[in-house]
Length: 431
Image (tube, rainbow, N blue to C red; front, side):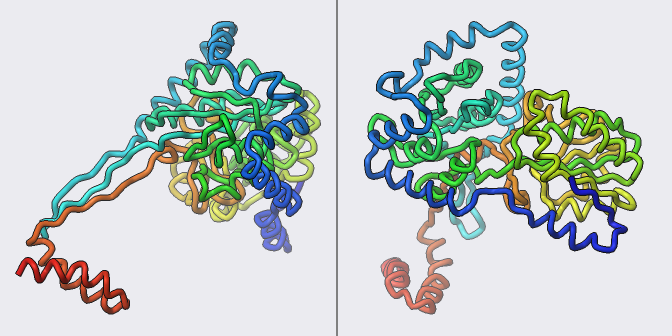
């Protein structure tokens, strides 16, 4: 764990190194993924079958390519009441939040008599990647499938790895609750490639969303343009801004809520109280052995964690913006003043009683967020990721007369005579 203070002589250089640290895939992953995509595109189903047997250790022809949707319904009905209620609460709140994101069509006529506007429509088919094995998250399924449903997507196809043929039944229950149409027992880069290009019985989709490991993220990056994607997501990260009035145990748990995800995740604390920083560091070390995820959290905290002491929290704000974190907690009594200064963050959690973990499950906003400083230019997953906007315009003879001459002049200036002629002919005909 890195410990810095803005009063340190070498702070600027040390903080630059923290900002520029890359914890994402290397050239080996890039090469391997390119080979997998090329094979799936060339061989289709056969490549998917062979790669699943090699990587997930089961034969799709024996275990079945698809999960029966009746099995999803049965998994949902078998849930313990407490867990079922929790999933339903999460789904209800996620749906309500995303319904407010639905865009409105526009249609108007301007002063020149030109009809202008835009019309929003959903994509025809969306593919969802849902991790399997140790990292099986029904919450992520809800966060991806529900916005697609709200957008009006007609077909939602899900791929999920099933190592040794085994599948997480909580994920199946969430798929039933969210209304997923197809579930395929494939994962990895081959699953993403099958969704993008189609592979025999698996029909291609228009958009692929959902988290995954480095191979999945790289496959999405390489296939962008063949399909739309939500983002290229890297390791998770959290920045907590906290004064000394916080409970150090709470803050330590907040930092570890991301550190337990993966050894590459990053947790950073900014505080204006050096004694509080010491208490949090001690609390982190005390809490890690108590976690079932201790082995992962220990490595992540030691390799990527940081505590930064600032003169005051105002001094921290431009530093936070440089990090552009996926998650930002403002653990103070009056967070709005600091929130007003935030320019770059995936999602912000306001006040001492708003831990990031609430946002991962039941709050409503999407937890699929930009990582690796991409919050400088990207946003979290939304209904708009499953929709596209078509502009339209309509001219009358009079409005063409008003706009036509300028169009002809610009087309000729750009050396595009056919453009100019298509307008000029109409102007002459309408004289």
